[in-house]
Length: 113
Image (cartoon, rainbow, N blue to C red; front, side, top):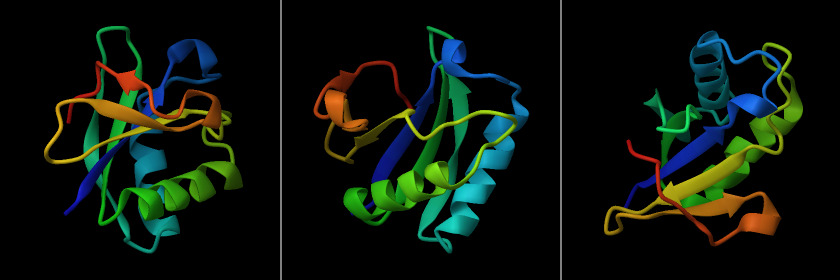
C-alpha cells in the first residue's frame, strides 16, 4: 500500500520561498531516490506553508530517501534538512509527523494531497 508523504515548509524558515522551490526540490528528490519516491504535487496550506507531496511504497523507506536528499544540498539557498515531514496512509484522515525527531507522532491537520 502506497504512503503519501508531505514535506511541510514554513515560510518563516525559508531564505527563498520562491515557488521554483516546489518544482526543483521534488524533481531532485525523485532523482536522488532513483524513482523510489514520486512527486504528487504541491499546494499552500491555510497558514501559507508550502506542502510538497510524495508517494512511496513504504513510509520508512520514503522518509529515509527524502531525508537523505534534503541533507545533501541547499536549494535556492534553503537548508531543508530540518523541515517537517509527515505521512498519511490510505486508511487515515490524519497526517502524522515522521521528522524531525522532537515532533514525531504529532498530527499535522492541514496537509492534503
